[in-house]
Length: 297
Image 1 (cartoon, one colour):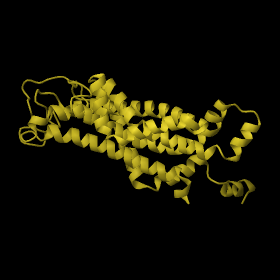
Image 2 (cartoon, helix red, strand yellow; image 1 turned 135 degrees about the horizontal axis):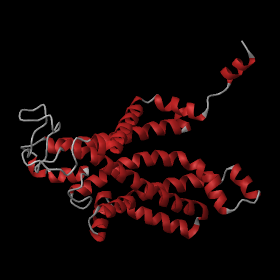
Image 3 (tube, one colour; image 1 turned 90 degrees about the vertical axis):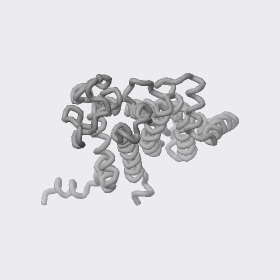
Image 4 (cartoon, helix red, strand yellow; image 1 turned 135 degrees about the vertical axis):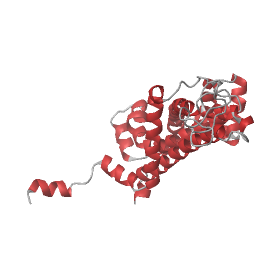
């Protein structure tokens, strides 16, 4: 055996290979990742693969059942709603809207949460107390009720609903960042960087923050599911996306009065929310298993 082959066999696996080995050991996480990839693909290609426009009505197909049920039609595979709009097309376009809401909410809350958590963890004192007590106040209130109050103040609408959900989930990122920063600032590499003349901003964002990324990534993946669910709840209450937007929660709200005589107009949007939320939760569990060194051991 050549020396190169011996070295290649004895060399430890790279970080990405090690991560994927730990992640793929969780079957649920792999399934969740596959479902998320499918949803993203559908969301990106919705204008081209959806059989109809999301708001196109068919006056001859009010509350038409799915294609496999008596009275169904192959032109509307999952049936139609009360005004003849194709349910499959609206679900496809709704995937684009709901996933965009989840990603945007998490992006806002992560950015603000990292900034506040870094400030609280580095500067301590009264500033830390003020930030953390504010986060504690937000956490003491029921999340959906707080989101409803915020939207009621700002006014119903998709943007205001996204801001409300971002505020509701913000304390989780602040607390995780602060705890990670407090744990990291006492380590030798931070002391060495400080002795070598590194400024506060460099210590915060170049030395400490990369080592706090793992718990934040896990929380962000779980946070997308929370954001989708809360945004759907606000849409169901008429405070989020407004009709005729094909957001999944708004679709459920439009179908409330037809629950008993048209099961499909409620079932399929509900299953879409269930699939997306469950997939992101499974992904978060897999990321936690792969990124937490204690669980690896």
